Image (spheres, rainbow, N blue to C red):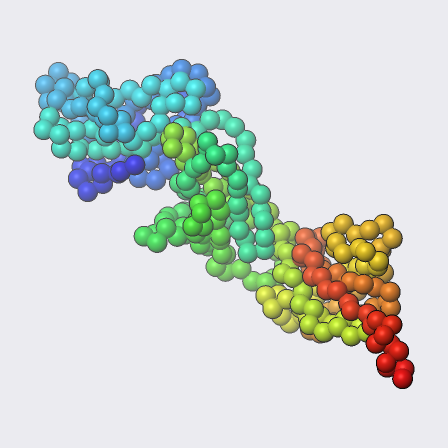
Length: 338
């Protein structure tokens, strides 16, 4: 979709109220969102914000013609009525002078009155979603702020497609993933040593190829979505295993301790996520300060699984780290005894 911004006379169209839309509002300059409830209706656009009364009865008004997504429409004049039915009517509307010169343009996005959610996936404040193949969309707007912030966040996008949201109390920067199915955000003034009292609220507006706009929103605490990376098991001997904190975890570890969960697998059990019935968690250890952690392993254990989570929050466990132990064969034991 091409936006003809270089020759636009006016940045904002004149909006005329109508009955069907629940409401209409400006998402970004020249992008109008129309909230609908599924009934038939109309939304009026105006080409030039010249005095409408001065153009009534003037032949110049009838020389203005309109296009929707590049296709010329039958309606003529400074005003254009967008026909709304169910979720249709969205598009790129351009108005032109008699000789074809572009006068103005408005992208109309349709938003139905539905509820939606965003799933938070990891501690890097990354939000992602999965679209059906017939509903692939593109991020049109991002809004992020703390619930304690006074007033609404002011959000803008730069030439690198990085979104910046600021309220005076907080500021966030967000970027869309290359695949277009997720965003990553960073809170500029976040302090990991301070108690987190207010939730983050994030809204993602996604535009489809049919010019439909959907809003996905979520409120959460960073502490709720923290998920450590895998622990690193670096040493194993006959009686003990040793592992260290993930390199990505905040330090000092005495201030940001992890709780470690250890499973010892026996016999033919090798799956950490679904251990056999005869396997059981033998010990759960909480480590507050040591970067290197050791755990005594039972002689019959064939494999050991270790995972970690924040010791102070009821957040997610890390993925399992798994290592198999090589017990000495009878031949090796006999050689050692000899």
